[in-house]
Figure 1 (cartoon, rainbow, N blue to C red):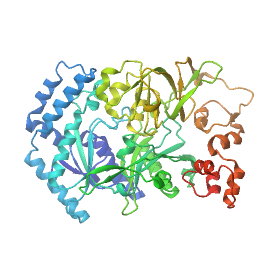
Figure 2: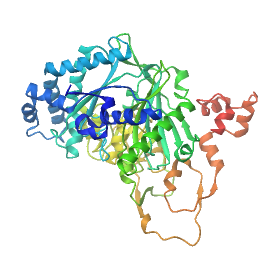
Figure 3: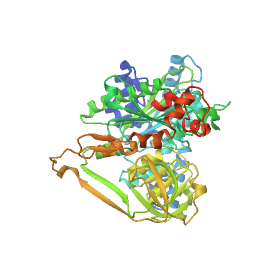
Figure 4: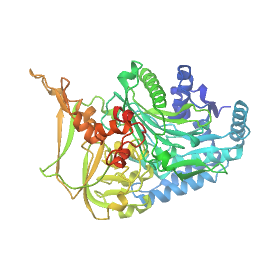
Length: 561
């Protein structure tokens, strides 16, 4: 079985053989299963299997011909080149030897789970992906709920071909990776039935300010493709790591997302996106107990990978809840690649809008990054409209995914209707250093081509889009060269959004916490209104108070949380 490895036989040193994703799954099964971290079992087709497929069909010389003389920064030329390569690869035959080995391992999975045509996820794992300095997030394809040997073989071929998606070609080209130095492994894992439960993403570092004291958990109803693809605005939870390490759960923040779509399976076992019932949109998709379990998993994974690396290694993790068993599973873990690279950066960079007057706010959403960008709006509905987009324009779209990276690199800023802090578009925006505001809900309706706007991610978690092209400056302070002051300096705080960012500044603690600011900006309801509601009394503007309480039925618990 030289082209197949069981996941439980793999470790991180097997990355050249099975890619970052599969090696990491094997590492967790082998090292963390005993500590309670659950990972679905399965097997991997190795990079040697991919190379066998390429050689068997004589593809390499033909692919090199497709690349010859092509300007890969030209999006139209890139599209033609990528499409031709993928069409070629999908026409190839799976070698009999490889086909036989895949079928035998699939039959073993059927026997282990006691299910004929057992449902599996088929996921790409490139040999250069999930490295500490490059995420390769979303560059290749994954397929869910694959059943039967014939369907499995076909989807493995599709994964092989996805090594040459437009976004993967562009990503490698822009970062200097040789297209032929990268190979593809394919992971075949038992499906987690999150279609009838929930799923999400978590980071063991704050994605925006780099605080290593936080675990960020995003959660939605249904399959996780909607969250990584940025199609829905997820629920968001922040867990405080220092108290978690002491065995106490501190959820610093719970924010309910609209979760407008839920991805299910239809009667033919295909995925389908349906509108989420209003009751579920307005409910948290995981409980506090599940947040606690996921946070403990995240901490164990981070500590394990940090020990292996010999240096701090924050992690980017995907999880899924099985609606049949109620169990929580980790389905992917890779090093975080943006904030971790800044850990030893002693500079404190801050963007400021100039002028005394408060500019007009047109729209707001979740801020990605901490920069400011301005320009003229260009509403783009598909990456194929790239010829309409000019360098320095502000990209406004419903959603973006890694296919949009060539356009995003030309943008002064990015605005989307949908998406959360952990979607692929947000990861790409951070990597390329473009300020982005996601989850605005209706940016494509509010703005028109040519509108002059300024996009600010400089004020914490809430990003704002201002009318007009505004002037701004950037201050960059070298914190390593500051001398201690004789007078102790204490913070005057009232905006939780920027707490972890300003904590990096030299300070001796908090002198004054402005609770009234927190109540007026975050609770959005008078404490006595909540007291009276909890006592069953009728209050004025009860509809507004219930709107502020979305996700809660108990006013007292809402206020305390």
